[in-house]
Image (cartoon, rainbow, N blue to C red; front, side):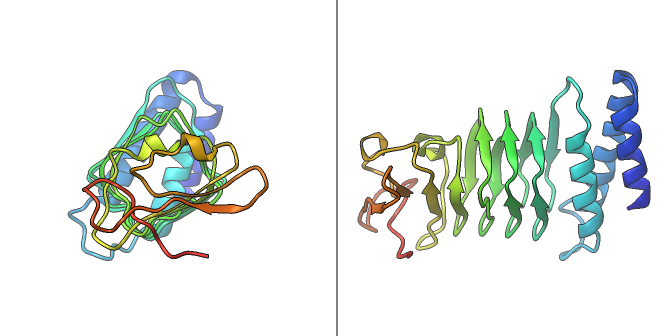
Length: 206
């Protein structure tokens, strides 16, 4: 972990070419430790958390791709992820608290039981993921339509609680969301459990 932090400081203070080199070293490290081929549970969670936070803090012009990684049970606070794409990753039961996602994409990932408490989303590319029992309470910058490619296991629906920048008329009647109106009052919009695939079904939540 000390080595990861040294690389992080080096990346922050270097020129563009060296920043990119440091970033690539850290990304290779993450892929080595968090590959899906590693035994479950893998033993390097703290190191992986630190390395991802370090990579996110090094600003370069190139985007970043995490592919086929096991990123379960991790914890991130006040982290900013820009131009990051997650491809075929397990991100189960991971907590992103007040994390900012900008120009990010999630493709064929497992986000079941993941939590995004008070996180902010900017220009999300895609959410084609498993959101079984995922928790999106008090999020900002995302609209119901951004979840149209998401799916979930039967009877394991996501909790989605939007801030008050959306009103009743903006919601898709085929989907289920829990949100707040301008009077801070909870409103539910319901759909039957027998509805078609890729729709959000009501969840009993107070």
